[in-house]
Length: 115
Length: 112
Image (tube, rainbow over all chains, first blue to last red; front, side, top):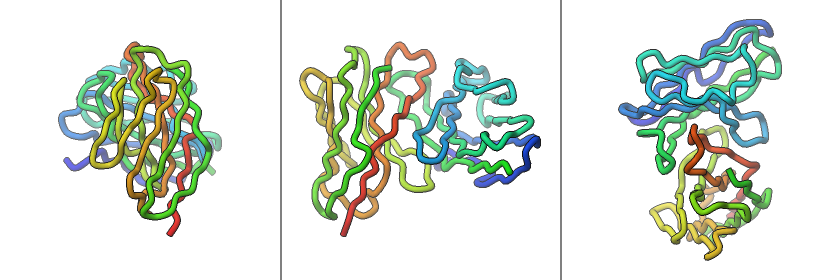
């Protein structure tokens, strides 16, 4: 594929609802990352997958946030009982491997607005 | 990962070189310097990275001081499309997750 794609591009939901955000990484990339970006700030790391497993989920803010990557390709970020403070742009990135020199390529992001 | 310091904003005239500084005085010997940029409403875009030597690619040049405590990203002929937030990131080899730690970046405004 051309690059990292994310769907939906925009999501509006109500406080307390459940949302799923999808990321399609570049074909063949084994490493996948989720970041969150609040208005006016740089992206903040959430979780890192190497293959199917979450190698580092230290950035997830609380247990309402969960992510999966069951087949080592597409990943879904799931947010339960959404709160207004969850409003942000959720960015996905992938890299060929997880090494320190591996360039991360970002998708366009999903803009989540919780009313 | 070492902390980076960048000016919050800079202006540059179209066609001139844009020189974006970054301070990383606590960088250690096994840490790379990465630059990404983010154009409005898009995801971050990789520009360049380096360890010790200066680097150049089709987008930019990266100049790292000999003591590695600071670096400068150079866009040789800035265009209006280079208007973006530029992030300087220090990335540790020992970073288990190899995630990128973004600071506030520099908002570069290229003016006609």
